[in-house]
Amino acid sequence: MASVIEVENLVKDYGKVRAVDGVSFQVEEGEIFGFLGPNGAGKSTTIKILCTLLKPTGGKARIAGHDVEKEPDRVRRQIGIVFQDNSLDDRLTAAENLYLHGLLYGLPRKVINRRIEEMLEMVDLAAWKKEVVRNFSGGMRRRLEIARGLMHSPQVLFLDEPTVGLDPQTRAAIWDYIHRLRREEKITVFMTTHYMEEAENCDRIAIIDFGRIKALDTPERLKQQLGGDVITLVPADGADLGPVLTELYGLEVKPTGEGLCFRVKDGASFIPRLAAELGERIKSIHLRRPTLDDVFLSLTGRAIREEKASAAERLRYSPHRHRH
Ligand SMILES: Nc1ncnc2c1ncn2[C@@H]1O[C@H](COP(=O)(O)OP(=O)(O)OP(=O)(O)O)[C@@H](O)[C@H]1O
Image (tube, rainbow, N blue to C red):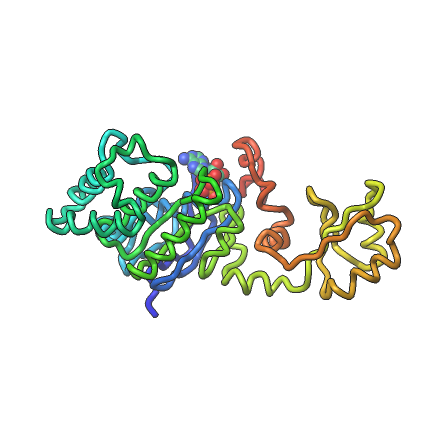
C-alpha cells in the first residue's frame, strides 16, 4: 500500500517556541488518521504545514508524492481542507458556495454542477441547496464545509478539529459522514482532535504532546499495550489513601477529579482483596477498561481533559523552557 502522507522529522519554530519538534509518520491510502493532543500540542501547526499554509523550519513532508514546500500547487490540487474558522459566505446559498470553490479550482462548469449534486447528497443537504447559508445551523455549516472541501475530488481531506463547538449528536452525525465519504470516495482523512472519544473513530492515531509524537498505533492496540484494568477509588472520609495504596500494593496512584486512579493487572480479583483489607476506608470502587485518556495519562503524566491550558500556561510549558 502506498503512503499518501509522508512526514520526516518535521520541525516548526515560532520565534523561541518550538511548536513541532521532529515529527515523523506516514499515512496510508484510505486511512482515517488522527492527531490527538491537548491544546497547544502542535496539531494545528502540523496540519497547516501539510496543507502548504505554513513553511516548516526543518524536515520534509510529501502529499501524494509531492513535496509541500517545493510543489505547493500540486499538493493543493490533491487536498481538501476544513478548518475551525467558518469560511463560508453567509450571503450565498449552499450551491453557490460550492460553485465558487469549483471555479477557484478551475473545474469545468459541467463537472462543478455534477459535483454539487453529489456532494450535497453525500452530506444530506440536497434539500437545502438553494437556501442561504445564513440560515444554517452549526452542524449544517460544517457539513457544507466538508462538501466544499471535496468538490475538486482531492485524495486527502484535512480536518482541523472538525467537530469542535458542535453538540454530541451533531458530532456523531459528522462522524457518520466521514466514514461514509471514506467508503464512497475512497479518500484518506487526516484530522486533529482533542476529543478522546472521537479519536476512537480513527484507524490509527498519533498522540502528540509538546510538539512530539508520544505514541502511534490503532486506538485498540494503544489501550491494549497499557494493559490491565483501571480502578477509581473514592476514600470514605476524604482521606488521602494514595500513600497507603502505594505502600501496601506498590501501586502508582494518581488523584483525578473522580477519585484516586490506578491500574492493576486483574481488577476482578484485586477488588475483593482491596475491600477485605481497606473496606471501611473506602466509599466506592469503580472498575473499567483503559481509555485513550488513560493512555495519554500514562504517556504524559496528566489527563488530556485537564489540558484547557491558557496561552500563558502554554508558554510556561513551551518545549524550550521545558528542556533548559
Ligand atoms: N502564530 C504563532 N505564533 C507564535 N506561537 C504560536 C503560533 N501559533 C501557535 N503557536 C504556539 O505553538 C504551539 C503549538 O500550537 P498549535 O496551535 O499548533 O497547537 P494545537 O495542538 O493545534 O492546539 P490548538 O488546538 O489550541 O490550536 C503552542 O505553544 C502555541 O502557543
